[in-house]
Image (tube, rainbow, N blue to C red; front, side, top):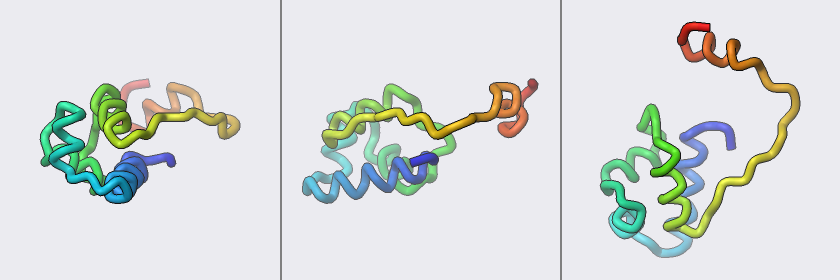
Length: 85
């Protein structure tokens, strides 16, 4: 997964597989049902790490990091996002 949308879709799929409602997962994670809904649909520009980890825990998932090869520099990432280098 490389985007927030992909994360949201995976969480939604897992939540449905477990038979959980958005409101239940949101309450367990300490966020609003509306925020979870927007996250699952990729409609949030930013979703903080604490919120993400809480949602993942609520549906029995965790992050796993995998090296994918040569990545761009931090300066290149800042330029891509429109920030100052």
